[in-house]
Length: 100
Image (cartoon, rainbow, N blue to C red):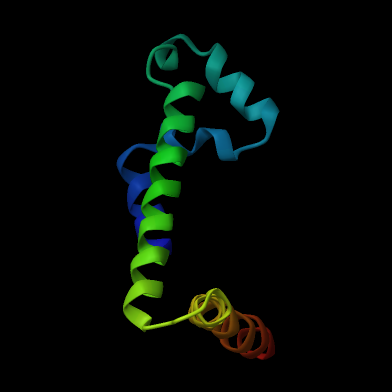
């Protein structure tokens, strides 16, 4: 995931301008060379909606193919499946790398 973000930022740094503090955003908006190149709020919203639909479709497919018969079984299966990266983050990245 981080590789995708870094690659996207290197390809087009203006895509990530809305992740910076408001003062930097306003400064970039005021520069004439970036006036028509910044993504609009409408475009950001549509991308987020598309990503949400894709995410829901992925979760639905995973739940369907898991063979869960009830909502609680499906919920526990997908919850545990998506918690694995969080556990990896806590155990490896946060704890082990803080020691090093």
